[in-house]
Amino acid sequence: MWSESAQIEPQSYEEDVNRPVYAKEWIMVIQEEYESLMKNGAWELVELPPGKNLITCKWVFKAKHDANGNIVRFKARLVARGFSQAYGIDYFETYAPVAKLTTYCVIFVLAALEQWEVHGMDVITAYLLGILDEEIYICSRKEL
Amino acid sequence: MQPEGVVRTGLKRNPLCRVLRSLYGLKQAARVWNQKIHGFLIKVGFVRSDVDPCLYIDTKRNIYITIWVDDLLIAQEPTRYCGCKGAIGWEFEMKNLGELKHFLGMRITRNPDGGISIDQSGYIRQVLERYGMSN
Image 1 (tube, one colour):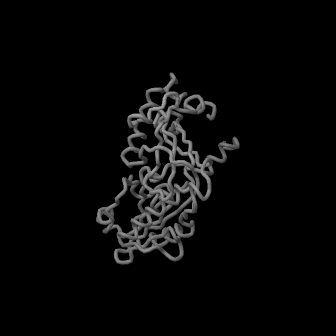
Image 2 (spheres, rainbow over the protein chains, first blue to last red):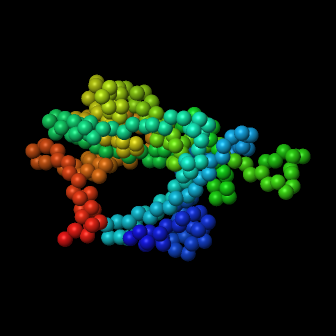
Image 3 (cartoon, rainbow over the protein chains, first blue to last red):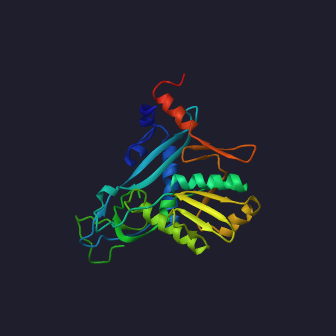
């Protein structure tokens, strides 16, 4: 299973473009993700001011399988390499809460007692919606 | 565009990107997203619970929302449900998963008597498979 994934999923953009297996599919999802970044106004082109840190980024690829092992979806995502960020320059606070399990249990109990409906919703490309306070610079390479 | 006169041969200066919106992988990505949705829910009339910072309640309309990064759970009276999705007026692109069947690895079942059961049968099966005990 894992070795199969490694054969299908490119490890880098360069590998992706030259890859005979599913190259078309990978390029298509890269384009989709790129458009989503553009639509959200992810960045603007500037020159790196002196004394600023440069954060590297890379493409990450994932093939989603169904229960029978067939590929159902290709995903490409541009990720910043957070380990190249320096505390106090590129980031300060990082903590974000998530709901407690107890809260979910209480809501389920209330919903059962009061006959409420419980619905789920998922925010598309949630992390692209947050607005940074810090000035962060990433490489603009030919693939971007 | 390079202004005239500052073209230096042999020195290739690529323009760089200043990131304005959060990107996956940035240390503060989860935090700025959480602040964004917090601001939105407050704006549309929800109050953050003192007990759980990810529980938001609209006491007038009796709507409960919990946040798990980008997974939201919305609990409320059925008659108001259709109205609420419109009334909340999400400013984000959302995917409605409908009546909750799976959430954070839990299976959620509505019993005929109106009760709600949660279990982790899918996870248990996965663990058994991983250790070759699925038979």
